[in-house]
Length: 400
Image (cartoon, rainbow, N blue to C red; front, side, top):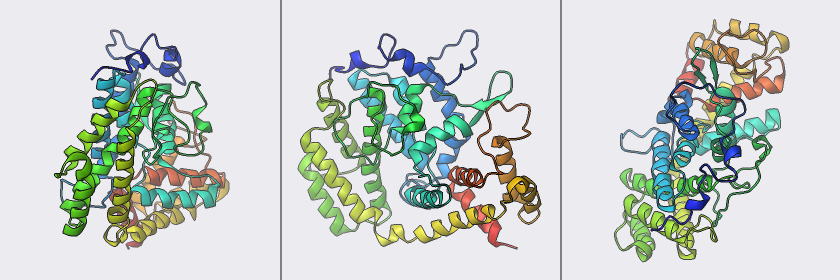
């Protein structure tokens, strides 16, 4: 395949290059630095705590006993692999693609999309703001995730504009075909709805499409392994997929078919896209997954449990609020909940207004004396939890 988008790659010489590699503030430099700006972003992301926690977060199926069922971190790696394959074929900047892909779900909540919906409902009620993981991924890299610099001072990830833009604009649930990068560098904090703003770069468009490709086939494969798809539904799926890929199906076949079609169909004139036939095929496949995998009782039965855990954690921490006395009340709270309470108190101490550790360079994020700010802090803390940590916290809450 010819590298049809090579002239559009986000490399030096692209008219948008300076905007793409810009950062909110200068990042420290070292002598003989061998990494490009986007590769520095990639390494900063993989060294973050949020990235490490992805291995214990739900992708589609909660707490699988099998080591071979996909978790959130595997999904992220699948998106990176698919994005890189597409980028290499089209002639785009692979380092930018990899950085966006590896960080795109840093802000995902515990318990998958159900956890996201519960946090969103609480956030709307208590702060008047919506919660969606794409926006939270940007918030985490801008404000929450901390790394030590060369002087042992902790500061936020301070990623390039192009990577930050790719995180908030990745929305894999968007079903729109023919993605073109937008021209203007906008204030990313002004984006208020997921999937409505196109990425700033072609590389960001690739990750958005790769996110769609990565989960649709893998979730089918996992559903078969777990016995969620019975013989009748598997036969129905085989007939559906077979019209496009032949009469044998697995994750590899589906992913290869979608990648090949997207690479052949994409161009400066068409944008990043599937052919019309494959776009229709993808829509049918996605519909099948929702009807026969994501919404079946065996998968949704745990939803009430997820909501109980998240709301219990939020309600207990929220009950501690006492205006200017909130931090003192939290310190007292640790007497009843020594592990859970102290962990939240120490976390909030890193991000609050007021006295802070000398080695923290990031600006304050929350004022615990303001009720809405305190609610935002609790929700940010919960959103960063792994499934296991959320369950352990809940168990401490209900134990004596």
